[in-house]
Length: 278
Image 1: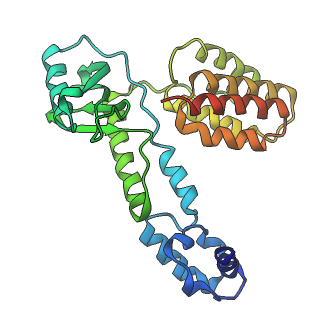
Image 2: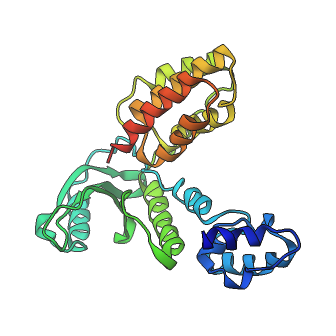
């Protein structure tokens, strides 16, 4: 209750009561563009220390940062270069706490970028496997890994998230297809035809396609038009089958806020499906 009272004080127009008592974390729960003029300067200073935009809350900033850290969808890869793959595996294994325990899967060689990409799992300090994470070994032996389940905590949360973003962007740069995918059409009937084609694939869709799907849903969630609702149901079903875990929160928002019950239900099912994925 004390915390709520202090935050309430911040929003009182023309009053700075309680502002000096707020920690950076508490300031991080507010948007500086919404507080009174007297409180704007300390709010913006706290946001600068936290490394988050002044017009976003900490939660929104974290969500925005994590939105770009979805797993990259690799190309099919070129003819394996046995020597390059072996070299890359050794580089990655040597970074692990228990190199002898390392397991690899889905390892591919990208000739045009001289990169080796895949997933790696190894035992941690407790002797247990920690789960597969993506890796890329680029030209010159640069190594980047990304664990989608790893969580950033405390005062270093945003710096940690930025490091994770740098790693996943490097993985995307080295491993993703360079052929851009077509944007989803705005017309609901055309979109449903596109969704049918996307549904024929296996595994997670590319980040771009999932981002397009969620943007379409978010833009149209208030609609009760029959064709739009059908398209949204199809998109939720598509995300259920080919969506990735980082989109769970956005699916949960559609599940909560969509005007039509069938959309809320389908996106709820999709949210449950993607939450269970590695």
